[in-house]
Length: 130
Image 1 (cartoon, rainbow, N blue to C red):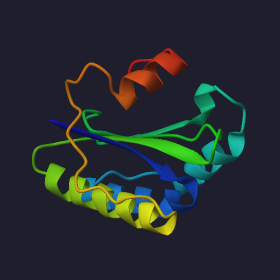
Image 2: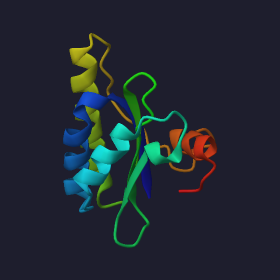
Image 3: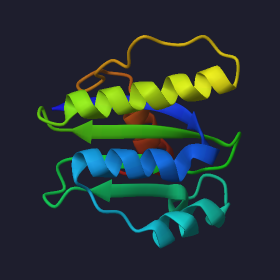
């Protein structure tokens, strides 16, 4: 199992979600995602968007809590999907970094099993288990 995490500019939300969902074979409801981004009440679980695979083992999780218009993204994927997911996330990360004049990165590491992860911070924030 692999888990990749990053932050990204919200203006790319639908493109990132579409790319990742296609790679992972996860369907998501665009209308529901639109509803989540419009919710706009700080620190409310209604700001959290999660799309699961059919077995609820793998997922794409985006915290749309609009603090700085930067969204945390967590993707948990299978061994078969991980290369495509990692490549996609790295490409988006560097595209966004380049646009905002930030240093590019050469990898997004697997955070599965780490003690301090973005997923754990999201779970603590909303007092849930994903």
